[in-house]
Image 1 (tube, rainbow, N blue to C red):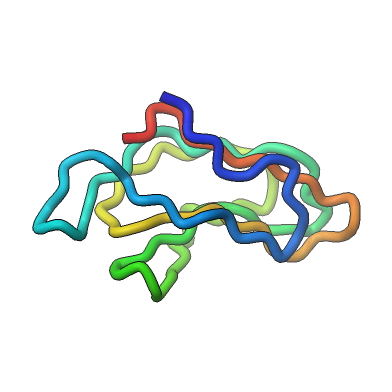
Image 2: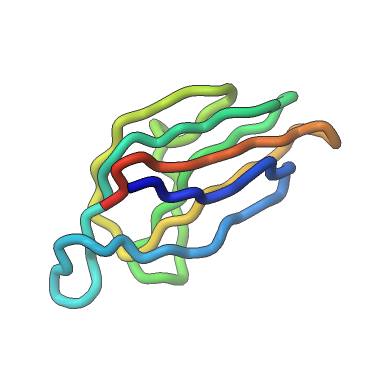
Length: 102
């Protein structure tokens, strides 16, 4: 399954909060796994995933923040996740998706 998180996003963009669907633990924490793909024109931007343990606080795992195009295999237990793009300039256009999201 492909989960498209952001398409051609500029700096200062946060995607929608998404709840992983697999392996619900006590109604809160779920497993997120797959391959994170980050592509596009960065021009100084950073992009990747933010994770939330409770739906209100967000943290960035350092291995999920990229300064250029790349792919990262991921496996996390989290309540929600979202994509982000920060920095860059007016020509920044970053696309983020997860293959095998579950």
